Length: 416
Ligand SMILES: Nc1ncnc2c1ncn2[C@@H]1O[C@H](COP(=O)(O)OP(=O)(O)O)[C@@H](O)[C@H]1O
Ligand SMILES: [Mg+2]
Image (cartoon, rainbow, N blue to C red; front, top):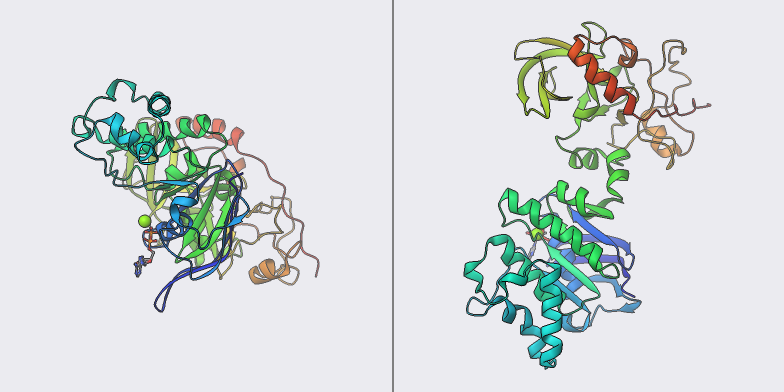
């Protein structure tokens, strides 16, 4: 068993608290990704698990055993770093065999283990090469192989793809995903600042900020139900648009969050917002339209395929159906509780106008818990889902995308 349990863990360097009250329950065989901006404490947390850093307070258990004071070599873990640091004068085989030789493993067994790991990582043809005759991606795979042969219960990766160029990064990411399949009982903890790596590799993601766990969940839980503005902005690419001030008034929220892929362009005057296109990017497969509506950042709208909207065009747009997120002034989602999405349906045409006296305030929504919130007021203009699209081209895109958009029930109106 290689469950990992972290309880009330703190790490301090002098007066500086780098990790604050970390609590995590990682199941045997899970692939967990720590993600967050540079300096948030990801490596430090990984290194406390490995034993390379001591724990200032709290408890760490691996496989049911408290290991706070257990030496790194006795924890059943293996670590792969960003810099792969292979022995330059040793062949790939010898690099991978090195730790087994140190523990006086019989030669036959070493060969078997190294060949099995090489097979798993498609390094078979390179076993007799020196590291200098390998690409960066191959070298990193040797470093991973070196860890695999030790048969760890827990695998720790610290940004293993960061030194690779974009194409190699994608290829090596696939190798790591396959590795996860080949070693199903092995618990893997993987650190990255790249949310795409986190989304593609993780069973569950731990989002960290300033040494604090912001949210833990599956990639889709984080994407669908971010529990803070920070997570909403961090997960997803391009990042979620945040509409504030006057732009959020019609939703009775401090911030309305809409992902670029959940915005749609509608005929003039039929949207919730409108503005001038300042820039558009055609990538062929899809396009990104940057619109100025007086927010600090341009609003990004993603369209499938090519876009007819060029710089200078005035466009009107709105969320697709109920695919938006409302946040209160504390940056917390306005929700009806754990099972409800952090978004709500704009009042339909037939719905009664919002009544301020029966409408929960954003703060009540969070504090009050289940049932305490917050059907948003009717947006200033008609919800876009029913509007006709501006161009036949955009119409085709819209129809296809709108069909796919999940329909969610509006949260119950609060009782006061
Ligand atoms: N040995 C150390 N002494 C003091 N501060 C440190 C030390 N190691 C890391 N830190 C600080 O801890 C914070 C988290 O660092 P780190 O875990 O490396 O972040 P990340 O891996 O998320 O980029 C940073 O602010 C860093 O400056
Ligand atoms: Mg780091």
